[in-house]
Length: 110
Length: 108
Image (cartoon, rainbow over all chains, first blue to last red; front, side, top):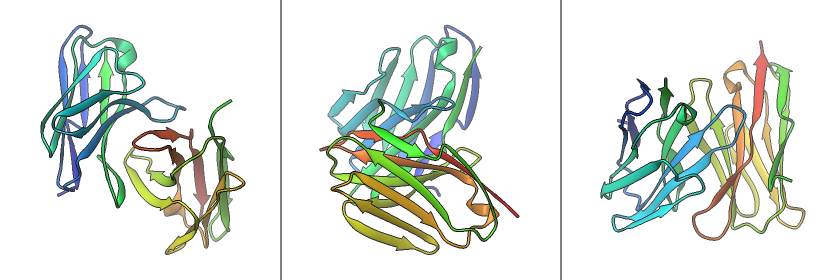
């Protein structure tokens, strides 16, 4: 099993729909992150969490929300998806051994 | 001006060539990361550096804190090294600032 698992891997959804992307990890890291990647751009931070009770907005949090259900689980929700949220989404964890990324979720909003 | 600049943006080389990818940054950092993104999208952390040099297999990463510069070298390059290589710098705490990446293609 991968250290950081994201589901789904691919998703096509309609404008206005609510969608949840899930992330679970077996690294035992407290810190978890959600990033989005657009073509030709670096990763941009959406939300991050340092532990179950600590959730913080990143640079592009508008239109997104998160839930840290447990140390190992961190989910990202799009409350009402819009086409410019079409992107590749990554969940990551960090610890003393550095960062570990999930395989990504390719989301298309039509 | 971007705080993290990578060069070149694109690099095509023949199998066996020695590859160098550069990263310059303009802020004080606590660490620098090199990551590899495969064509399928997955991201793998290669190195985390705060000083000096690290080596793993055919990959070597160096950092010069005074000059705010890091390099990633690949010796005896192979087509399977084809990927996007990303430099990211960590400020104090959690924040990572990402470079835009260098797309490397190694031709057989």
